[in-house]
Length: 70
Image (cartoon, rainbow, N blue to C red; front, top):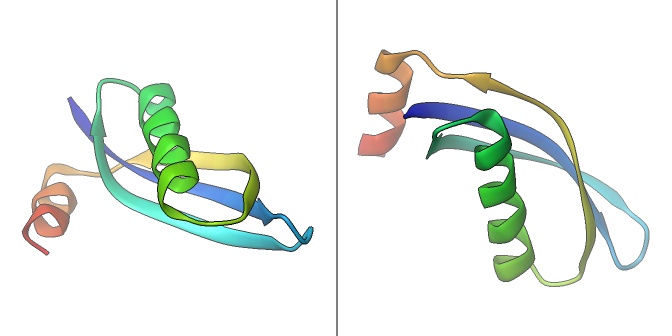
């Protein structure tokens, strides 16, 4: 398991594009972390039409533990 930081762009139902960063998503792969982020966005944010992923990065163990405590 790794902790990932996911960077993506959300397009709302009015066509406006908004940046979105999800931190400390714990998953086996970056693809799995991206899908967890997509699911979270569609379940929790109203009016989302699409989610486009820019990139993800693996957080080092210190950063991962820091974000878990917050």
